[in-house]
Length: 172
Image (cartoon, one colour):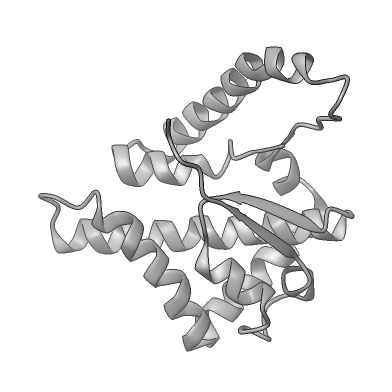
C-alpha cells in the first residue's frame, strides 16, 4: 500500500494555501496518522493478505527517483501531447474546486497539479523498477492509462510497462 504523504504537500499548498514547509510537515503528519489508523485493518487481514506499507517520501528518498523525475519533467516540457494530457487532468480536478479564484490562482493550481502528477509518475516508475508491475489506482487517471497503452512512447519504459488497474468505487 502506497501512502501519498510527501506528494500530498502540493495539494495542501494549492487547495489550502499552506506555505511549502508547513504543507510538507502537515502532509507527512497525515500520512503517519493514516498508517496508524489503518494498522487495525492490516492486522485483521494479515492472515490472508501480506501488506507492505510504503510512503511516497521513502520512494522519493531513493537514488532513482530524481532521475525518473528529471526525465518526466523534460518529457513534459518537450512533448505537447503528454503535457496536454497531464494538464487536462489537472483542469478537470480543479474545475470542481475553482469557485471564486482568480486567473493567477487557477494557473498556480494547474502548475502544482502538474508537479504532483510528475512526482507521482516518477514514484510509480521507481516501484515498477523495484518489481511491482501493477498499480491499482483509486479512480481513473487517463494519462497513466495512456502511457500504459503506449500512447506516449517517450515516457519512461517502466511506466509504459506498468499494468494500471483503475478502481471505480460506489458508495453504499
